Length: 393
Image (cartoon, rainbow, N blue to C red; front, side, top):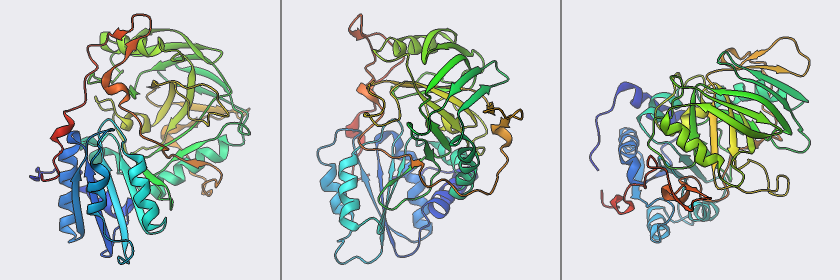
């Protein structure tokens, strides 16, 4: 693999990933796993490991389906019976998160305390330049400041300068909060980019003006930024009842998502907390929902199936550029862009964001209109040829 020239911002991001997030030491053995769309990001990461003179192996993988991946992964890790250090696996993908079972198998072989798995989605130059400017301790403190207020609240009103005005009822006894903060938890995967808290709203009504960006689990190459053409969605009884705005590509994608069986249902109330991300990016990227603002996720929800009893293949996040929260009867709003840290510990009962299976990149780009039964979105594309991920690169 040829190392691509990096900017200082990219090098700073690589350093932050290796030092602040992974906390690497000379006793660690590293494995870098990448899909074809993340070759450049893998090259930058390998360069950072070489500068530290750390033991590392590099392997390619096909996204989602790769029958030879388990064998290649097993050949790249040391013998857990004789190796007395820590195994650190980095996976880099742009649109997908693949091969959960194979990675979990290795984690269990080494034991929860001897194996760290760092899973990067939206791997790109922007990921290294923007997503890692705050460390896990800083993100944890920001998430804690919000969670300590919201986990005890009954209601929240969300407003933004773009015109969003949402009235939301919370049920914290029934619905979990999820906190993505980049903190390693033994036995779990560390999901990056980090900087978000989210739950399922017990009730939500009002108007969402998404003037930031969108992020969807459908592979698309459209420009997802919405500042030039904000998208306005009216929500009644937890469902989108209509939308206006957006450019032609955005309208087509949103319309197709909303045509799915549960596509108009609000499945997520999320707040981005990563102030280190100072702009929205054109790509369909998790970076955008980590940026400061509120995002409403339509379609698939973030709760256990026993609690919220529907399943939807599509999840579409529509994101505002900043927001203020009025929590219960407090007359003073919480400005997400100027969050006042309270020094509280992060709540222990809040779920870390984790995955229980392969995700994203749904249908390899096949978003269909259920009424027509065919692919209708020309802006949705196939994944890069998976065979391009060569183990020998």
